[in-house]
Amino acid sequence: MKIEEIFPEVNEIQDEKLREKVIKVWEYAIEKGGWKDFPLEKIPFTLLIPTERNLVEHTRMVTRMAMAVARERGDVNMDFIIAGGLLHDVAKLLEFEYKDGKVVKSEYGKRIRHPVAGAMLAEKFDLPYQISHIIAAHSKEGEFVTRIPEAVIIHHCDFIDFHIEKGKL
Image (cartoon, rainbow, N blue to C red; front, side, top):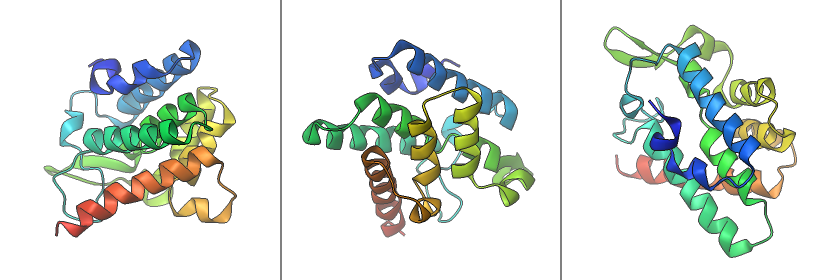
């Protein structure tokens, strides 16, 4: 499974090294989380609400919405927006597991939420600290820090998609 095909937005990252690192983080998370033989399109983007939206759809939606905001603003780092959007939920591959025929919270995920685990993955692969920050600050953990503009955008795009899905109930 090629990350570039699952997430074509990765090809819009101009910095080649950053693009390669984003791909490596996804590949590592798939392997470490035990999802290598499981279609990513069958992983829900959240376990908080019943939803048909999967992790891939949500990740791409958040990334594309954030890119649109960044284009309109013109004063934020587009590579950081794309990388942060694509990686904001990557650690759900560690937070979740497939057990007894369904996707559930893993033991790891009960102890370490995906924003923290995702930032750790970004650090492991030597991404710029701003990407680690975007990942760590995209959810409620971000309420305790001053978000950089790219993190503000990813945070709001993430919650827009979540709340629209929640409203479908």
